[in-house]
Image 1: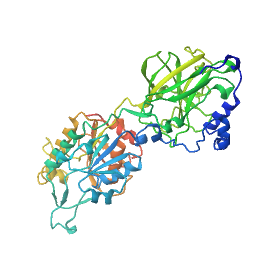
Image 2 (image 1 turned 60 degrees about the vertical axis):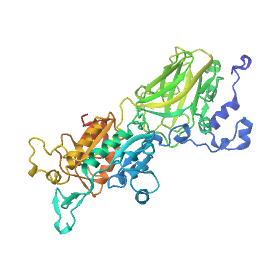
Image 3 (image 1 turned 60 degrees about the horizontal axis):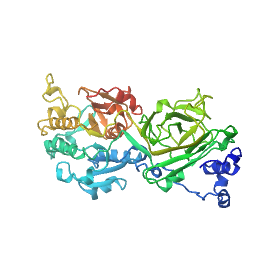
Image 4 (image 1 turned 180 degrees about the vertical axis):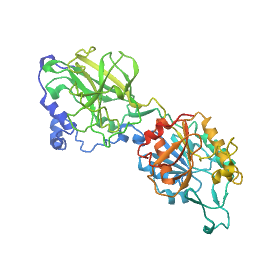
Length: 505
């Protein structure tokens, strides 16, 4: 792709206009067929620039694979399913009766009939390609037959009846959880990385997303392209310093909707270069000539390497000059990516590895990574599971479920055994111990505690939101805690602050 030396200083107006049209800077021209033909390009008025088009799984910004919800038709489970779907997760609901479940859950989630108390039903259809598990199942506790509202009792403002269990707690709370943990261990996919562009599996949408953006826009004559092959993409061409030029790049069109990488720590590139220093840029604005965030990286000639670029290392720049007054990179909204080879580093400093002439950079993938794992198994347990038999606990002064533990088949004791199965499994987990669950409205202030001392109540709405929030909180990984409605000292909108208080088990 060498540039003819006799025309090296001749600026290419047609290519300049073609670039602007491709990136939508002159959208009127880019949608006119005769103008496209004059420029020598194929008309393409409709291009899918959603995350799915780039090779990302359909889960989009919320991670690879399915979230399996166990106990999906229960009071908390159905609310969890609804929230996951609203956030764009792929949801697999484990239910006993799919026909009944469909009337409760609607058509958004994949339904699988199975029973955690019967290991044979936990087949590959349940466990394959899981990003996470939220277990909302539990023994059914119901009013004793004949108990009526006239015998209602109150404790901490929570209405309850004289109760009995309809299931065997040992089978549900312990053996069932144990069966589930064993079944899903191999099906859980890695959650420390997420593919953004998988060039080993190129498609038409990916090809139409990336385009060359060279120094012709500044009057230069450098020229580059990106081509997709069977197993990688090749960014190549010729860079020239003629006409005060000296850079080549390929950039994506704007991604809609923007991508949220706020739970990740940086970008990882799998590539083979030519020994030169390149730049990788991220954009949070959709304007054509806007602020970008840049990180430089070196390559090794003819060697495949993995390059990690922490988000904290990205520098705000405008046309290769740093913008010291700019805000740090906002990873909640990434709307464009760019690869660049330039003779300049930043603020007029030269790229120490730059040489004019031919170059090539082969890329297998662009993905985001996180240094800290996220929980992959959220277990709904119960407050007070450690109190029966704990030294110093006066059972007669305890809350009703502790006093009734033996009458309810040792429900708290078996819940604790189920927790232990998960803690010992090696899976990254969050064990949530709610106080008394109510049908009150959500959006209440919450308080977390550890040590199994907390009493109170929490609405099922807030409990469901808590389960979903835990999926994206590194501080929720490998912790056990109790939760109840707070006294105004915490706000469920401040999830990071709540989880940061917790100590790992």
